[in-house]
Figure 1 (spheres, rainbow, N blue to C red):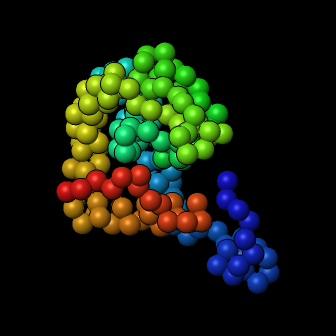
Figure 2: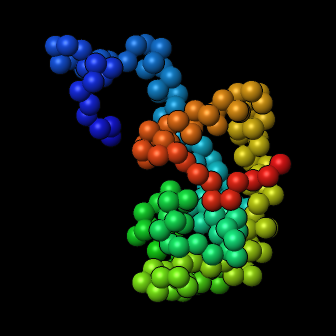
Length: 175
């Protein structure tokens, strides 16, 4: 799960693991519960209202936010937080629904890009209002604006620790 480190922050001089304090453990358990339950709740809402999984919605959202509705498969996999293999299976399902098509990249014929179709754009536009309402209910309105800002800062730091680099949005929302 986590990479082994030998720094003093992780292990004591004797080599013993520095266990979490009771407060740290409680917050860790709360975070892991959130990480398990939030995607499931969003997936359920999307399945019921739009017939899409959360991952499928993420793929369509990534494409709809990109210039020309087009992204390299590798970039799209990273955005949707999935492996290339998983993305390939999902894109195949989305192709059968005529939401996405694949083609060789214009600048590198060895790579493949996914392209959002008109039907895919209609699907994401149709699914977005109920999804945003649920995201607002479960997260945005459940905490204060200051807490939401802090959550974004915390998420960026954790993502940077995981990926070893700053997390970058495909197309930063304007507001």
